[in-house]
Image 1 (tube, rainbow, N blue to C red):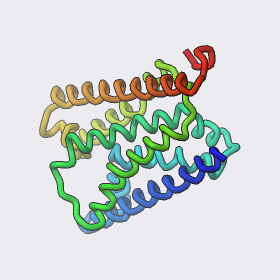
Image 2: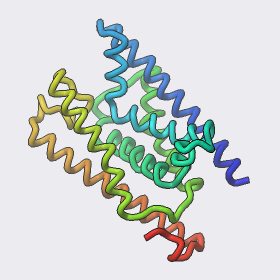
Image 3: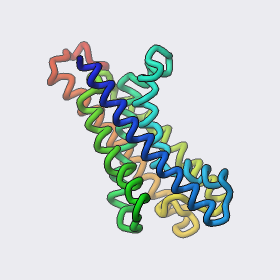
Length: 221
């Protein structure tokens, strides 16, 4: 019964995530075309935002195990590791947006809907999904180190692409305006934030496992 409820919740949340991503895609392509850019250019810009990539990751983690539950990818994405990593990433999306980005622009209409879904609604709902439906007691402290690969690769891509086309998706990564020293400082702070949030998730995972009666020998070291 619990697995059935989990699958229903995953399907509904996945539908919300894909819908929000689709709405933002239409808006982004429309803006690109209105500014005289090509569809391809608009698509590349769309996928250059950490928010978009991370919400896409959340949507994939939620829906692929439902569509292909017996496939190697489906089984892997349904395991606690990938689902917990996605929870850490989407938490950073919500926190960084609220702390550093929300006050610098004022979306309206359909853009406001997409903005709230991607930065507020989906992060909160996915965290609740993680709390109630992701198996606890299977994470290790060292897992967090591996989780850093995704944001670090994203930063490397963003800085390399920005140097090539002189455009950066986020102001705190804008080397043109801030210089490499300041941006490097921001990257260090963000990396520390990812590390800290990841450790919090592992700590919660292990505490919940013990609360639910999983013995120390059952919790991975």
